[in-house]
Amino acid sequence: MAHDSAHHGSATKRIWTVFGILSIVTIIEVALGIVRPGFLIETDFLRMHLLNWIFIILTLYKAYLITWAFMHMEHETKGLRRSVVWTGIFLVCYLIFILLTEGDYIFDVYKEGYVAWDF
Image (tube, rainbow, N blue to C red; front, side, top):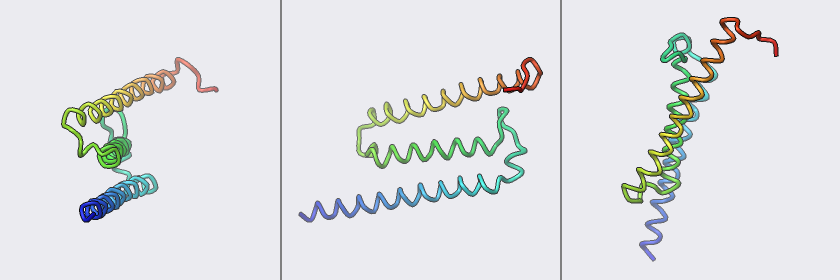
């Protein structure tokens, strides 16, 4: 019985810790979205504003933390953790690459005047 209550106490503490970290990261994202610092908007990296990269990285971090803590990946074997987490990270990075590449192409087509902006 003592083991169950001790395990429950540590699980509750872990949930609140993860909740606190996720809250802080979300507050940072919202603050950056509201303030939109000029140096982050004016600085480009791989044809995208640095602020957008920060949003993408923070969102991936939150997704990783949710998977790690709430899907109990920290208690699984190394092979299962890698197969779940790395597959998800690879697919998200691939999706980001496709969206940025295609979006940049469409923007260039409209910018160069090949197609009119009338929708």
